[in-house]
Image 1 (cartoon, one colour):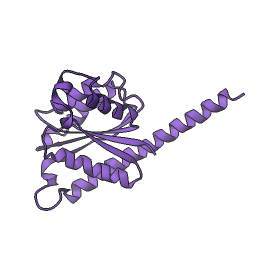
Image 2 (spheres, helix red, strand yellow):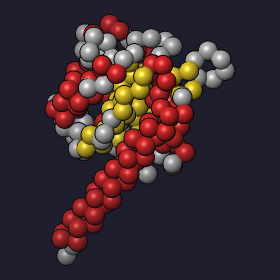
Image 3 (cartoon, helix red, strand yellow):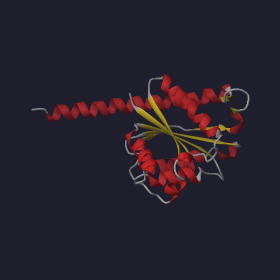
Image 4 (tube, helix red, strand yellow):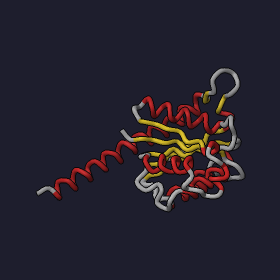
Length: 193
């Protein structure tokens, strides 16, 4: 089963974006995928901003991206774009850092005025990094994330929409895994004596 990594780019310790990413990871985990979560805010800031790829925590984060088959990129929208924190991390990836990977972009924000951030700000960067397949992303309104009384949760309509995107992402991952297996099988047949 493919290995998945969620990368969240919120600078907030109590992030709605992290709540959304955790919902996604739970859904994918229940579907049998191996999942992990990388919160960029937990990386050493000095190493991140100075692009010190060789430092242990940065190196481990980059290795986690390299090892993942699928990536969930989740960010709040600030000033009509994804966060600078996420940008700093994406800048550390090699130019082909997402080659062969299926990616699900997610964004959270206070207004539907920012819904196009995924397609006009985030998707071009993911494509430039070589993502094989960027699935249809989702924008989740901050007001759809209920916090404070009990565990954090999503409003039912937001959860339903998010899970539709997650299911499409999972289907794309499975299709990519089958395609890769077929390619390997075909290569083995053509090189057999």
